[in-house]
Image (cartoon, rainbow, N blue to C red; front, side):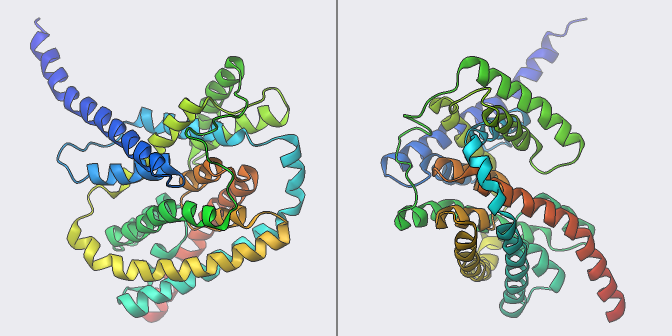
Length: 362
């Protein structure tokens, strides 16, 4: 049989998606480069997010291939784990009180933000609560679908919060004078891990990530890379950061991964929802600053560390910010993982409560 026509059809079908993905990554890198030249904090990440959002407006935009998503998360996780020195791990004994404050803060932020959406946006209670939960967006979306909530509106509020945090939080931290990172590439000037250590971290992180995926953990590949990197650095099996060019490329991919979540959101939807989303974000940030300040005093860490740890954003993006801003990745990572686990366990309880109140009201 002649498969030449079929092969040609496959090539024609695949090439546009491949070219689009390549262009998207190049444009995201260009956005990161422009932001770097302009001295924008967290430039490679925030610039890539902005460039990707703009690229989504074109007809040539395509979803990021899953292998690239996994590569982005793996490289970010491995990079973050490099900060897990024995000295850093010794400091973990003072974190329980800070994590307890995080739990109180999440509760306050969720309820105050949802009240804002209901009072000033006219949202229904279920939609407002799900849109206000800080982080764990995949679990929130799944719950919204199950309850026939307004999924697009909920996702837009969640994405708007994440995008704003990525773009303004680094500038706030630099303004406060708490971030020492000023290098062109991520990790430039620091000792670099050897080839053996890098190979073990990436392959081991991928394997652990697959195990975490089977266990249905949030961001499994990222956590797998961070876990193996943390273990190897804490035991001093290896030493040093991921090569700067590779770490920077990983951040650009994370920016693409974050920015393309805005695909499918129309301008009419944005004009309708963004004003009230801005208000609920402002309420959440005020509370975040207050709880972060209290946690910094309690745990004896920098205010910038506590601010990123308490920021109501996604696990991947917030941990990436901690890394590129030179913050304590262990402190920030523990808090965001605790947030994801806490929300994951509390969501079923929240649903039971919502169902019970629905029956009472009917």
